[in-house]
Length: 425
Image 1: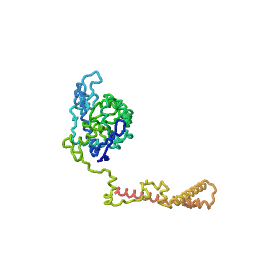
Image 2: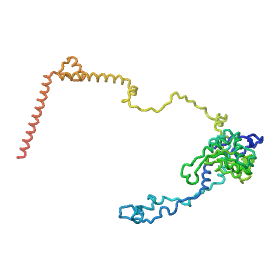
Image 3: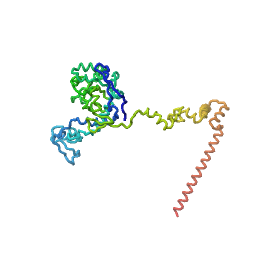
Image 4: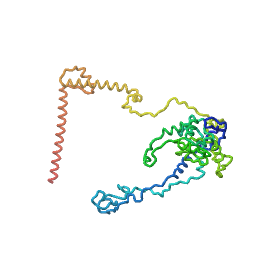
């Protein structure tokens, strides 16, 4: 909940954008709490009250004679169009899943179109919208071009209520530097996106200022043909005009007499409204909504502990877990000896490759130095022997295997003989 900044007096400007010398006390309604949630809720419900009932035809999707074929035909039991001689016959009908059928849950005119809004809630929303219209930051955030407007809220003399011609109204808007907001409306004219183009809502444009008057002496006729400009009587203020779209911050131009009537219409916190029986302005929960000023005040600073300043020397970020078997840098961090080990393994692989090459040459019959051959055998972990000794070892192994096979054969024959004897008995 926020409230507008308090200013005791507001200057009144004439049609030439000069101060008339008169000052008006700022009405209490401009210091009311700004509740955007209430404004949005009330605006949504109020807009629903202008809807026209619509519905599809009661006969839509049922304007054919169709009947289900029943069971036993291996087809769905959906009603089917009668007859023959056309593609339409035999096609499904009526169901929402069928081509040419009715829709699911067709719209009805007896829907609950309108919404009742509590009177006090409507007043709360309207008061919030008026208060927000006096805050330049909120008005600018709504998109209004008010940078050159002399004062906010903008109050002008009652002479403009007597304007009859549009050229007078245009001249007045140019003088008070509000024409920039009208130019924004001119530049925003465009075609609507969607099917609204077919429904008499072809063009759209932004909104400009709203002129709030007390007595219409021709003012509405003068301003009605300027794009984006709206006029409204101060006694008939409407939330749909002051907060279009449910967003607070409409640019309002007040006449002096209309501005003076606000206290009478909405009252103050000391006295109730004269026009709305038993109505008082909503009380804000905070007298001062400037939180930074409150927190820095001596009273609050005394009762809270001093701030702890933490000096962050290094920002700790989430590290990616890398595989040390694939990443040498990570492996070196884990095992400093890993690089020396890799180097020694590389050297050993080169020595083994050279030793294998030397043995290959020796097998092919080339002459190889005996000392180098011995070194190669040591590197590969093999023992070099002469061919005669090798042949002896092979023959010894063969003899050993032959003796084993002979023993196995004898054992088999012995088992066979014992088996025959047992059978004869």
